[in-house]
Image (cartoon, rainbow, N blue to C red; front, side, top):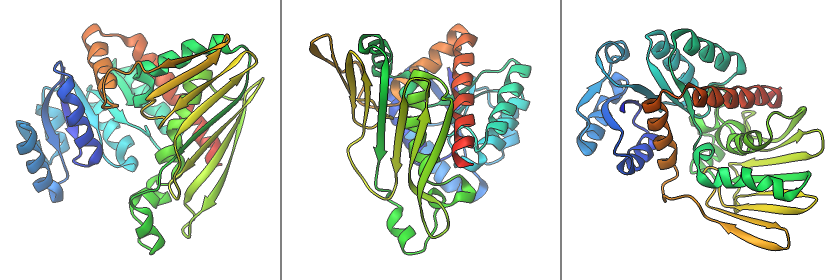
Length: 318
């Protein structure tokens, strides 16, 4: 599978590291805005990427990549994805998909109209440990409580406290704890249990109104799920699912799901099924397989998950 990359930031560097373990994917080009051309050229030189673009229309017209990967800042995901889909191109877009449900729905509808593949890159959904968590639910009996926490002191928070607002803490640029970090908890919970009946969000606000941390409470028919996300403080990541017959503990960050312990049926079972140290390898192996087999059922499932989470985020923001 051939991949054209949009962006030169940290997530792109992470992707290129992961692709060392995905020989089925070939990177054809990297795109950056004209003012960032030097960064793109340095990246291309480091990773032997054959072509650099600063004109997006030119890339869409001339690059023969099978997928466009949108690894740009959150607020332009919608714009660049829409242009690619309108040109009939397949797209992988980094999380969060787009700031609103309406925008996500528009992009999904456009992809279907163009018979193009549109996938959101949410690492946890493709990890073997996620499948293990889903399979273990039946051994827990009726679920009664879920608690997830992903709290990571942001490398940009000290500047924020000094009054310097970078995109990660700018609400106008889809910054804040909900979009950047709690989105993983929401994807984990919705991926396991679907959409809640209703939801609320309580936040710690910064001086510009951004949520530096917050707690989402999701009401399901027989249980509540609580999702804590923080960029202003840190703790170990975890997710605990409590059932009448046992409980499950995911130990670690929800975007990596490194270790799962199932306490049920009178015994403890430790699951460490992820095969790679880098969290993005399984994800892009799956994308390559989806393309090779033209698995539009997998695309549909990805879109349904994206729409579910986007609708939930709209409710939480409100």
